[in-house]
Length: 235
Ligand code: ATP
Image (cartoon, rainbow, N blue to C red; front, side):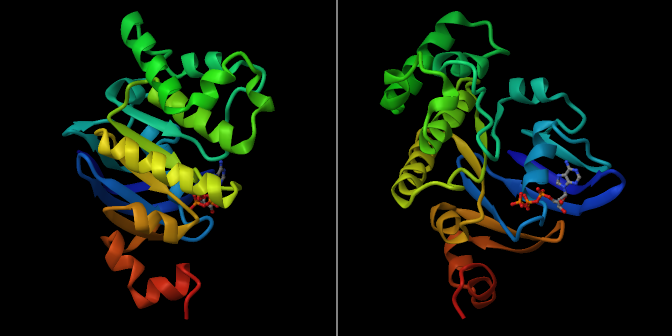
């Protein structure tokens, strides 16, 4: 469904992705794990049209999306839940959610999706007129996910959704990932918390210094001695 081939990306002429290739099949949860600065977020940003590829191709259902604008990528069915949530602090919860539907004109569909986001996250419904900057970290993460869902995506890219959250909230995020996936969303999950990501993922890729070093099922990587040592804190 989503295929990245030989992707190269640079910031200020410094190349950070050196020909990265991966693929995501429809209905999968695919995790990208790796150290700080390995290039996980950059991979997601390249898919979303937030950074330009120097080389390589990105296709969604066989159609090239590299070079497309972020708006067109959203229209094509890919939503990005950015690292650090990036909710609009001075806007209400409901306004933030509606921003997620900015590229749509189907009013009935938008209303239906808003109702379903509120059903999934009752806390957001309770707080829909509250300024988003006053939400807790976990609530802001739910809002960021809800906002992504408002574009009615087929693929959801999630960048570090558990970062800085308490264990209980992390478990809740895992549950949400599983639910969204069982309801048909394809998910690409970037996580520092490799154990969590691998336990929820069908397949995973380890990114090291801008390249894929290892790939396999989540379970294979969880039991791979090198991965255990490098990313799971087990000697
Ligand atoms: P992290 O978990 O720390 O975000 P990551 O694997 O997601 O790590 P990226 O954020 O993709 O890594 O960063 C890859 C490399 O690109 C790093 O060396 C980083 O310093 C650099 N980089 C990221 N964003 C920028 C930017 N806007 N300008 C310049 N360099 C950047």
